[in-house]
Picture 1 (cartoon, rainbow, N blue to C red):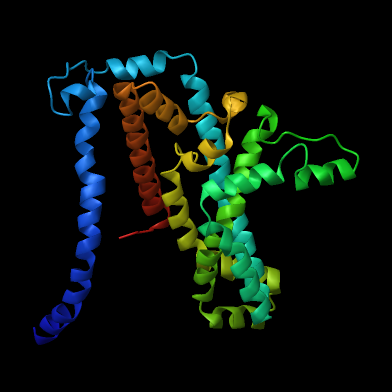
Picture 2 (picture 1 turned 180 degrees about the horizontal axis):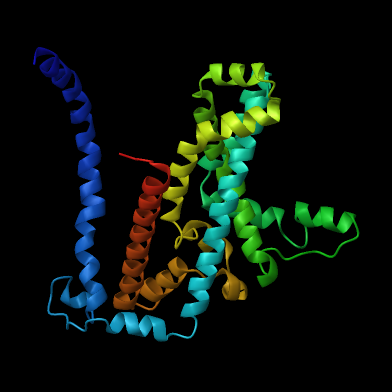
Length: 302
C-alpha cells in the first residue's frame, strides 16, 4: 500500500502536466464536433449554428455524390494517399537499415540531420522551392533533362506527371522523420541476438532479415496503423500550394474540393457532409487495422 501511494505521489506531477494538452485538445477537437449537425441541415450562417436551420437529412450527401467530378476526386485521393503510404513506409525502412550499417558516427549523424531537416519546413515554403526547381523554363531538374537531350517537362502543369510529383516530394519531405523513428526501434534490439546469429554463421543480410526486421516490426505495424487513418487524406497543404486548374483531373482531392465548396462557394452543408464522411471512414480504417493487428499479430497499442 505504501509503495502504491508513493508511486501515485510520484506520478501526480506527470498527470498535471497533461492538463494543458487535454484542455487544448478538448477546445479545438471536441467542441467543434457540434458543427457536425451542419451536414444534415440547409445551413445559413446568418441563422447561426444552432439557429432555425431546416433539417434536410441526407440531402447534402446525395448532392455531393450527384456531382459529376465526385468519383474522380475520391479516386485521386485514394491513388495519391495509397502511394504515399506504401512508398512513404518502404523508403524510411530501407534508409534506416542503411544508416544502421553505417559505422562512421559523424557521417551517420550528418546524414540523419540532412534528411531530417525538410520535415520542419512548411509546405508553403517547399512549394515555392519546388515551383522554381521544377520550372519548365529555368528549373534545375529541366536543365538536367535538356542537358541529356530531353524535352522540358511541366511537372506541376501536366496531369501525367502531377501525381508522381506529389508523391515523390511528400516522401522526400517526410522520410527523414520516419527513418529516425525506425532507427530508434533498431537501436532497441538486443545486441546478443546479433551475436548469436553471427555465431550460427549468419551474414549481414541474414542478420538484417531474421533479426533486424522482426525486431522493428512492432513500430512498423504501429506506423502503418496510424497512416491508414490518412487513406482519405492526400495532403491538403501540399496539394493546395502546388495544384492549379490545369491539373484538376489528377490533382483535385477531397480536401481541395471541400475548400472550394465551403469557402469559395459558401456551400457549408455539403462540405461538412464530405468532411464527416471522410472522418467516419478514417475512423473505421484505423479501428479495422488495429483489430487485424491484434488478431493476427497479437499487437496492442494500449
